[in-house]
Length: 136
Image (cartoon, rainbow, N blue to C red; front, side, top):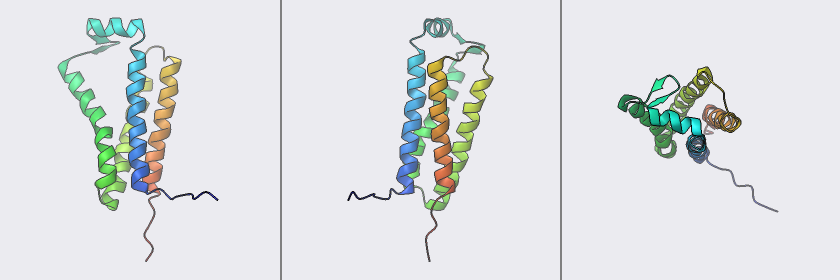
């Protein structure tokens, strides 16, 4: 008989943030195999977005948040941890949803990874929402 070890919710949350970061990263890396994306980046614009220091700083902050959540999910006290994961998860769900508003064709690889990203965001919010209560 195999033992089915119960995994602590903090570890589930932390690993879910790890997976989300990898999907964010690989979605962008794979996109750089597209000639049109490379050409846009070389011109300093992606669609209607001007690639400026301010834009890149904002993207750096946006991507630093889930990276910090990997650590924070393990070390924050349960009550704070639960709400931080719910709030940051919902924030990233909104960010993901806004990518659908960007005009232009969505390539299959990008859509697939966005689905995976959505799944992990939902898992993060769900695990935080269903955080087990300590029995008295």
